[in-house]
Length: 427
Image (cartoon, rainbow, N blue to C red; front, side, top):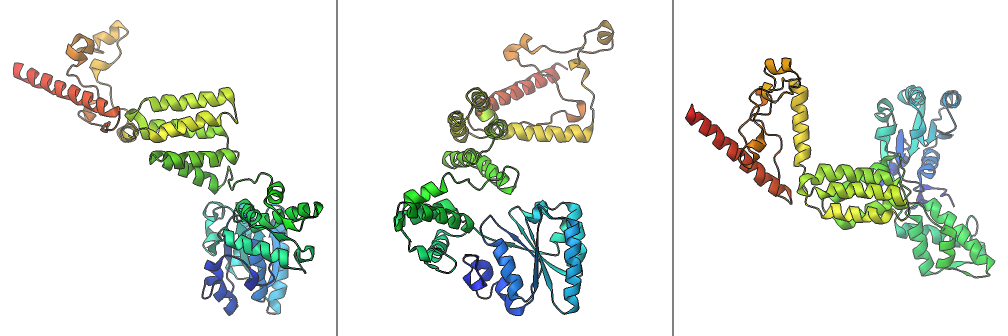
């Protein structure tokens, strides 16, 4: 059922519609090097074949997983021969993101001098996987998952086509089955047609002229969600998870958590991110949040999966519902910047450790005031190096428990100021 012309291609109208980029390329027979970036089953290979065919070019293809520089040299030689008779060569590299830097470097001069028009296909973000010199000479075209109605159009075409499809079987698909199939396909045409083929066989086995939802469910079994633990979607989903927690949206956070769980993500990875989040984004607004996150990690290690998803869910909803403050995190960054910029500033003598007589004679620990000997355990005393005296790093928010910390530190500062003034009067 692979389309034989661009007119048969379903979807990607943002690229192929009237006046759109690829339509204009084909009409003008001016094909340029492009990268087709999109999820599986969106027509990347088909589009490459049809673009080459309809622009009158010779089509050559190699798979990045099994081909290297030697195959590239052979194709370059063939392209030189084709060029002598006025024919261009389109090189299609499937899964171009799997080519290493040396292989991509070898391709670069052929693209630069126009010997090869390169079409690369990738499911990964090309800005991460394709070298900059090659990427700068190619246009990145983003392919979108097929819409449900586009999947339905493909299915109906396959059922009706007697030459390339299943028309000879005289099967039809009922509405619930079509709904199941559109959902199972998740925008992937290849998955939709593969599932349809198996579902049709199941319907034939029971001598049914109708493909039902049960046939589709049986054919689809358990579909894997789009999620590559080492690819861009991994980072997209975990980013959505963290941002949902930060935005106090418990519903979104639990959804993204289950997206990762259902796709087979390592649950301890999720728990680690929750521990970091509890300290970075909740902090002292709710000190219990970090305890909850650690407890989730311990529970996961203790009970394992799938039951471990239950404490994960409890932890996620708690973190989403907790008051938020990144004051401690911001204090860490600011203090770290001063530590790097100012170097090893000397520790004030009065708060240095003085375990030996020699150190005490040198003034280590001299005039240190033990706070518990003073009212409210507050005493006027500097703890920062002289160059940072009076510097404020931690500015507590007025949210959650941190509001109490803010009030307490304000009272401490006020009391120290009062002690300071009293000392000045005595002088």
